[in-house]
View 1 (cartoon, rainbow, N blue to C red):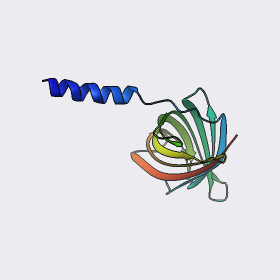
View 2 (view 1 turned 60 degrees about the horizontal axis):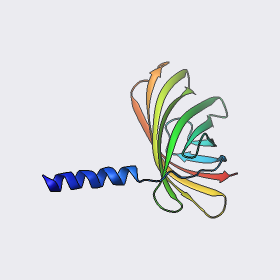
View 3 (view 1 turned 120 degrees about the vertical axis):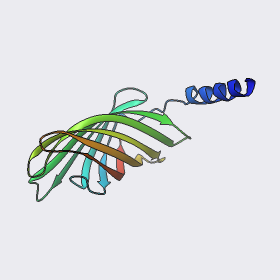
View 4 (view 1 turned 90 degrees about the vertical axis):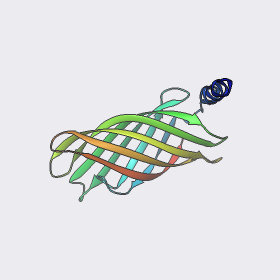
Length: 148
């Protein structure tokens, strides 16, 4: 029983000792995904506190006839000095032959270089809510952003 208590205490202590990471006030760049709508997206992040932010992505496809706009609220936690992980949720709207609304989640890893460059890799599942979108889709993406 003592061993179980010690393991639970150790795990709980580890989770609560994760430090919040100070994040840049603004970051803008490109997010490259494996499909799931517009492919590449222009991505903007705005800090809302010391460890949370808002991310807005806009992708254009089909000679700008179709678009995909996503907004996500994210929490950021430090893993190492310049290495963070983040998770969040949000939603968006897509126009691809018809207009649809979807809910989205995100979980990812990012590396904050000594230069004002942020490199991230994330997984984003999306589920259609309205407008002919049905089912679950997801994408794995690489993003490069300039922080200011």
